[in-house]
Length: 489
Image (cartoon, rainbow, N blue to C red):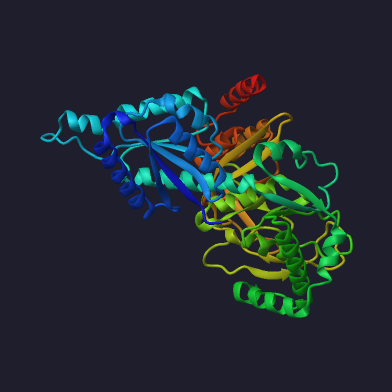
């Protein structure tokens, strides 16, 4: 869906028609200019001057599925009581842009007419009070609207708001249940749907096998050409690749029929299948679908959401797992990988992923699964984990620095990423474990910790950020206070 944001400007009838007309013209100009640099159009809607106008425009925003959020600004003074009824019913992400039309005070021209017209300095403060009084989850961005940093903040918030919209309509297709006896992949699906909007349901693996039988050789031939154009074939076992293509096409058809954008499976339930979907899952993730291994539907959903929040709607965000550590003193790294399923969006830009076939010594695979093998790119990133704490959801985010893998690992036949965790690997690990972070995460080079904080605020869930400044003692105190606050809620 193509999203847009509405620009709603606050004023009042006190100033007369001429001032209102000036405000409207300026607001329209601002929306048009900002739309040229923002990732999503900002559409001027109204200069709101009454309770009725505000209620009506917010009602329209709530019911328009293409509206991903509203951006408000007060050019003049806008008495905040007129906003109460509308904002109390707002169901879309909300950003308060505290700015003004003019950048400088005009020394010679400033008079009382100028002062009556240009009152954002206290109009936005009045408007901000009612947001705080109503305890609304909102983003406040302050600064001159033509400044690059303000535009960047607004654009980043827009991408986060799109993540909210994706979340609220997200369907997750589970092929079978989660891995037996695993705690962290469990969760309250009813609470998650009420809180985040996700519809999480199960389809039998036998249904997938039946769908696979309907895939034709012609269908597979066409997908094989896509594989050849995107990846290097580094195996003689072409039949294994064709089998993965059959799995991919069947899963995609089932998800598309249901409107699902995320899926999970488990190596413990491959009823009627020869291979665990490896290449199939990887190529689906490259198309924007979210995935979770071992039945982890929470990380599958978060992968979809964070891909949508990334650049161009499918940034470098992927299902990930901390697999093993390099614990050499002062040279500590985490090696992230999975059995088969790492999205090729993480691959180094100068390297084409290779399709290989190897034995998988876990699960009920009858034949060696095909998978993509590559090294992950270097750069700043985050890992994020959503966990069910029983009565509330907690989103844990950690800053990391991905590096080119420090060794070749020629006998490791999987895609792999290596990173340094903040504040250090061991301190970060202690903090992660204290917070209850899962072993599955979403690794993202595009989405920032600030975006994840904003997303958690919009969804009204707990957020924990582990970064360079975090210490074990400070985190313990934060978790203790969070626990009290959320219990009081």
